[in-house]
Every structure is written in structure tokens, then in C-alpha cells.
Length: 199
Image: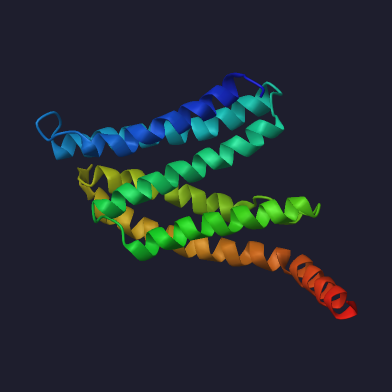
């Protein structure tokens, strides 16, 4: 396993996931709920910043690696899923939204793994739509965690609207990737059907 600053930043993002979730389990005598909200939002923002920074440094210093390419999206998905589950427990996001976003990540991850196995991973490489979906998620989630007025704006309400937009983009990007993979899926299914008929 290569060990460099970009990968260490990715591991830092993974290590911060329990902090985002765990702060809400601290006794109220230690931290008030507004302080928990602020702390969780700050932890999430710092973790999200490492997502941009590790990729930037890996490209800048020519330290990209197959392990880093594997770990980076895993860290992102774990971070988003953990935050959504916390928000679900706090009743700040609907179960449908959480299911759509987490379910999409599982589906597309499985699709990319299968496409890689058949040598067609480039067909479902991350594109602008996937990046836009991630951007909306990374803005909406800390607003929902903060859940208080921010510069005269209701952060919780704004985050709620943005997470709905993120959910729509999530479904859109999932269907887009499935459309790209469909020729391979159809071809493999037809080949399997022909092989079964010849037995």
C-alpha cells in the first residue's frame, strides 16, 4: 500500500467519520445540541475539504495510485452515508432521500466493479453529472447538520431543499450510468442466454 500525503488525507477523511456521527452521542451536559450541530458541521466540512485537497495534491505531485483511486471514492461514500444516517436519526432528512442516495452509491459501485471486471470501466467513469451531484450533497449535508440560522438564512431549510436537488441529481446520474452500461449488460445477457440454450 503506497503511503503519501494525498493518501494520508484520504485516511484522515475516513477517521473523521466517527467524529461527525459520535458528537451527537455525547451527553448534553458536555455539549449542547447547537454546539453538537456546529461541531458536526465543521468536522464534515473539514473532511469534505480533504476530498478536494488529496486529489489536487496527488495530481500536482504526481502521486496518483490505484490504491488512492480505490480509497478516495470509498471514503466519500462512507462519509455521506454516515452523515445521512445521523441526519435520519435526527429527523432532518427523510428515509426516502437517504435510501435514494445510499442505494444509488451501492448500485453504481457494484456496476463499476462489474464493468471493470469485463474491461469496460471507462464507460462508467465519473463525469460532470456525478460531480454536480456530489457538490450538492457536500453543500446540503453540513447545512442540515448545522440546522440553525446562518447569515440570516435558515440553514436547515436551505439544506433540506438542496438535499432534494441532490436526490434528483443522484437518480439522474444513476440512470445515466446505467444507460452507458446497458449495451454491455444486454450483450452479456444475450451471450449467457445463447450459452444456456446450447447446453
